[in-house]
Length: 185
Image (cartoon, rainbow, N blue to C red; front, side):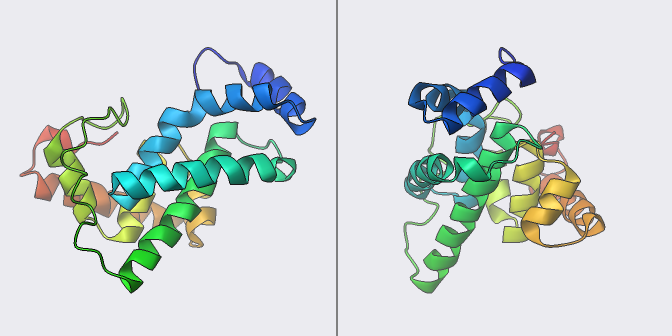
């Protein structure tokens, strides 16, 4: 969420959006969009799929706004929706292989996050991680989700999430030759 919107301001916008105020929803979305984009691109490793996923996440979040219980930040909820959509896209992609999958990730010049080093090497290394490791590290470092939220999202124990993130960080260090650039956080 943007640092310019406090949790109280966010809650007010959520209440207005739940009452049908599209402008309030748009404000919430704009504050979270960069983070959601980073999650989508990180999980799909494909700009086209990420664009589709972010559009679908926007529609689903608007339609399901009444199910947002406000126990977390709005951006966290959006990242969870987007992550589910992206996992489905990646799963369908395996069923129907496409030789172009991930081809544009390395050439993507979009600033996907201040938290992720904007280098082709890091993006390539993240794309080399297993789906579970990639999702866990992206949700933690880019999406800002807690270990508990990631555990719920992935349907595993918190210790499993901690292990996946630890192993993902180690794999990134190894893939990048032990450089400090592998430190995603």
